[in-house]
Amino acid sequence: MKEFSVYDTAVDIVSCWEASLNHIYAGEFDRFYFDRFPSLDSSQKTLTPDFTLFFEDSYGLIGEIKRTFPDDRRAILSELEQIANYDDDLALKHAEDSYAVPDTCDIVIIIEGSSAPQIGTRLQRIITEEDEFDFTNNPVLIRYQFNQDALMSRYEFQRVTQLEFEFQDEGLDTENSLSSILGEEGEYQTLEVYPEHFTPFKVRKPICNDAPPGPYLATFLWHKIFPEYLSDDQYEKWQATNGQKEISVEVSVGGLTERVNEYMHNGTVREIWIRRALDFLCGANLANDEDDDEYAIRFMGLVQDVGEENIQEGSQELDQTQELANIFIRRYCESATKEQEAKMEKYEQDEEEDTSTEQSGLGDFT
Image (tube, rainbow, N blue to C red; front, side, top):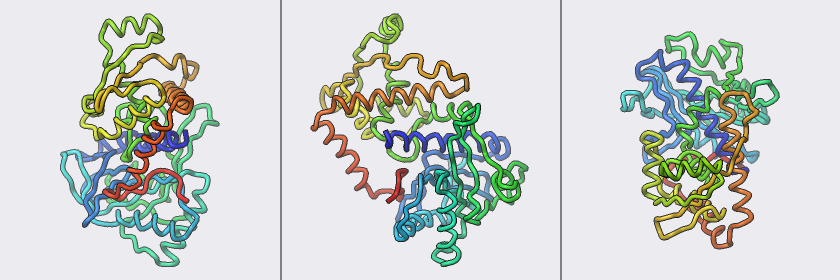
């Protein structure tokens, strides 16, 4: 559940920034582009930050999500070395489906809010006082929290002022710049993003620039993709039983991958991610592995009426997805064999050994 929650939150955050900055900037700049799945060439490395933004030739942003930073000094330095890889003349994708290097490009580091001031203080000391790093692109530290205490739940983003670097977006000819909202110019306001704003972006692009955990992708497949496999007759029978009738859905790894990427409009989902999700469903006793590429899904409606009482627009879909994940994970824990568990562990080991990209991941650091 923790693995699911960490990834789900990361997708929320990317979707929040895409929704907000599209609203603020998309009408201002012809080539403005928010890239959810960037792959940046830098010397011998391929860099995969969590998102990039191209505003115009004068300015861009590179975004990196960290739940927290480690306590050990060497581990902190290792994280900063990874972030320092973005301090380079990197070509960002823009709306004309090409790439350009902005004159200035800041690095946004987004972390969970509870330990943010302490982390900001430590980074300030290491970068400036101890002179360990010499950034040209400013590393701007932003903290987030999901506020459920208010009448309307929302994500809140604030500048962590203990790390003193500001946005360098003075060249943008617009009143609603990031520096005027989150920076000193705007007296460090809070950027608030509600579910009704970011949920449409999350629904259309349900992953971020990291491999999704099996339970996470399985939830999306069940919620959005498998219903598309039902014939009109099957769908009518399924609706007539309020989704309780079990229907066998035959899928192939290749065909399902293609369908998901069509749903995402030129998506970047890989076959190995789909296979991992299907093997997870097998462990939850909701699918059968027919052969090397074919799976039979035991499709049924597992979630009814969750979130129906939540009047906040966009929240019902989030509640339903969360409840579906809870059901899947409980079933997996109750049903998975040792052989199936070993198969899922192998996926995780393969990801840890993959050194093809420079990306530290989304989880806790120790």
